[in-house]
Length: 372
Ligand SMILES: [Fe+2]
Image (cartoon, rainbow, N blue to C red; front, side, top):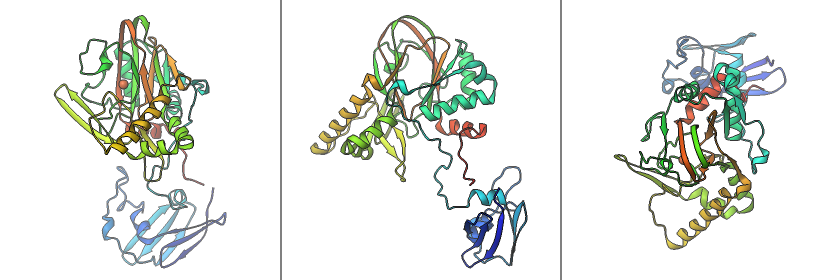
C-alpha cells in the first residue's frame, strides 16, 4: 500500500509525493469539496452537504498526513481526506465511467465459452449472480440454465438483477403469437437481427427472455455481436463505419395509444470515441429523407451493416428451451428469431442499463478500481 512521503502546500493545490515516488496535485477547492468530515459529507447518505460553488480557493494553513488520512486546516475551516480516497485519484480522471468492463468481442459463435450458468448458483448466491452478470458484461449475453419454467421464477430472477422496466409492453410480460401488441414479436414470423427500443431515448439496456413452452419446429434464436461488427467495419470499411456513427436514424413506435420517437446513429460513441450503443431496427425505423446523395450513402452503409448481422458465421443460433433464461445486452447484441410453427410461450422483461451496472458494482465483480 502506497503511503504519503511528503506534502507541500502550493498555490494551485496540495502537492502529494507518494512513497513510490509518484506525485499528485489536488486543487484546494477540490480538497474542500471532497472532505469526508461530517459537515461536508453526510456520514449515512454519503451526499455532499456543502455548496461547492461557494468554496474559496485559499491554500491550507497546515497539512498533515498520518496512516489514515490527510488533515488540512484553512483560515475558514478544516478538511479531512482518507488516504484511500486520495489514492484512488492519484491521477486526474474524467467523469467517464471508470469501472467499465472491457467487452470481449466475438466474431463467430465458436469464440464463445462459458456463457452458461447454473440457476441454483445465480438464484441463491451473490457469487453466482455476479459471474452470470459478468458474462453478460463481457460477452453480451448469458444463459441461466435450469430456471424453473414459470413466470414467477423468471420474474424473481430478473428482480435479483434490478427493476423490471415499464414500457408500452408493460413490465414483466409473457406472450405468444397472438398480436396482443402492435409488434411482430407477437407473431411467429421470422425476426431478423435487431435491437429493441430504437424509438426510446433510453432503449432498454438488457432483456431477459425465457421460453416457457414450445411445441413445434423452427424458432431458433439468433444473437450477433454488434460491437464486433463495429470493430470489423472500423478496420475494413471505415467510410461505412463513419456514416453509421454520424447519421441520426429515427425510430418510432405507433400503436397501443402511443407515439414514441427517438433518433441516434446505428453506432453511438461517447465523446471520447468509445462505442456505447448499437441501435438497429428496420421494422421500427421512422420515415425521414436526406439529400439524395446522403440518403444513398446511408442505404449502402445500412446494407453493409445488415449483411454482417445476417452472416450466419457471426451468429450464435440456438432454439431456446424451457429452463434456459437468456439475458442479453440490448445496447450491444442484436437479436432475432427464425420463423416457427407450433405454439411458443415466452416471458421476460426489460431492465434498465443503469440498474444492471449498479448490480455489478454492488456485487463488486469485474470492476477495475483506480487504485494503483
Ligand atoms: Fe426484439
